[in-house]
Image (tube, rainbow over all chains, first blue to last red; front, side, top):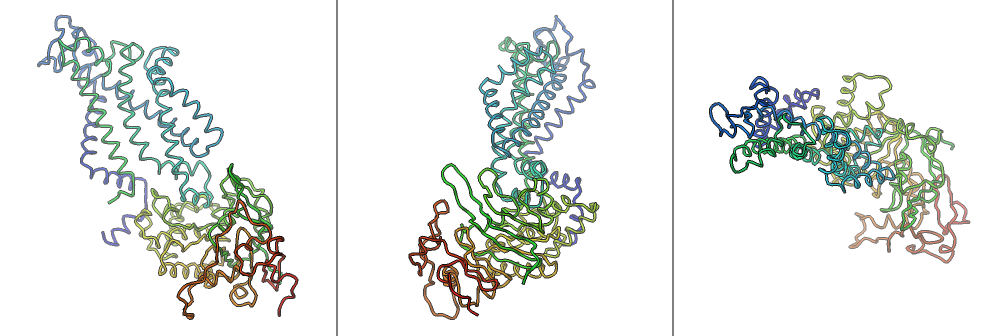
Length: 295
Length: 329
């Protein structure tokens, strides 16, 4: 790259040019692109679910067509109540994505801020918060979510709250440990010497340097959250039937594993592909955001 | 003789308190500095040079370090009672610091130009526009000899010497009145060292910045400093103008030892003559003169009593050898 183009390129570093830079690096990883395409398809399906097939089809019961294997009329077959699996999968993607993304992002924001605060300041506050997190972590996450849903009542909103609460302690611990190691670096002390305040330093210096492991764990969390929402829906504490949700589809089909195995394959593969998509994108994003790996 | 005191450190004593021990890092040091002057603080590792620097900026680690006694006056105002928010206004704008290791002192995920802009944005009292700040960033990069076109690059794309220039550009971005340079050239090789020193000297002359140069290299002191404080075990054992330290007939035995440890082109020695022994454990300092266990001219009185200060003009030596003697003229 010549001096001239260099000058032009770096004349101003506007936000969009940085986004373009990250995009350029992201694009170079074929695996990450596959993940992105996968995710894009799934998200498009979720957005245009009503266009693809009306919601009524997902809950309509056709008693005569129970356990129809995949065919022209029912692309993915029908379940034990004769509902169209294809429509259920398409509309289920909305619930699954909503639950997975919103809970892990929420817990990233809440857990990230608490963790950064604890790691950066340490001391009594840190101790108090960490012991509180220990208490939360000593309860299995599913039981914890269950307790919260039982207390608040079973609906989608409470499910999100409950799952976020069960996800936060892990995020706090992770962010705190990364922040502790970053906060010790010389450039943080240097930032103090320029006269930066604590919040500015946490947001501009500490967190961006701690981003790698945080991104990876968040994308992994998304798939874990989809699965644990499935468990909760199964025992009636999550998404209420007849609303379709991939996890609950999987659980409903378990009883008919032998008569109609396709009922397990389809939602299983959907969850798998979504999880895979998020993980690949997360990996790619981590690499693209790290300027040290820049060509 | 009375000079305008711009920075004055009086009787500063800093300890690090840990469960295991109390470390006496800086013990009752005093010095002052006028505008545009450069003070060199020389001494072995662990002599308390960096601790002194960090206490001026009030950046000592909060949990362990304590300034037990003393005062730090900057432009006539004491820095110690200031709140953290008031201190932040001074850091970066009035007093800034060049860190020892440029490899770790830059944030690896932010382009260097933005790191230079950081202190300009933080201390933007005149309400400069973004473009004006960008212009200043470009100017300060060029001032330290880096093409402005490289401002969008990340620290890892620069070599060590270039990184140190960036660190210096950051420190100078707000035209500080006082620049504290903590071993600015230690991490660099000799040729780059010379460049960086020449550049700092130029900048000092152009901007009239006062400077505290922390180093263990007497060669650097000779090149750049007006005053020199020789530190040992948290004390300034000898202080004076540069000529006093290099040319005057009387010296602290420790200073002589330091000079003995540099290779000399003229003498045909096969081995250097280092100072015997090690710096004392700062959590368990010897009584009397702190240098007595290693001093070739140690006498009984040295082990019992801390030495008085012998003074000749601005040249001060804390050693029993000269106590009670008249200043030579």
